[in-house]
Image (cartoon, rainbow, N blue to C red; front, side, top):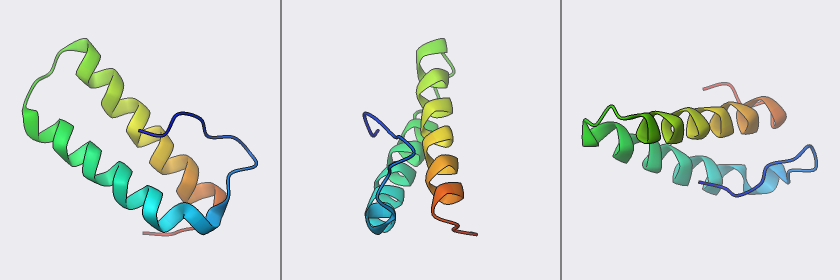
Length: 60
């Protein structure tokens, strides 16, 4: 999970960052745990992925 995403995010890092975030998300979902902490981590990862995709105009 990235520590801090801001409007000044450098899109040249998007490929690596998205790959890392998607791997973390898949790992958390694979745990099969549905506790509050895990759900919050999943939500944060999904938000970070959406932010990068929107900021960098990535459509996939």
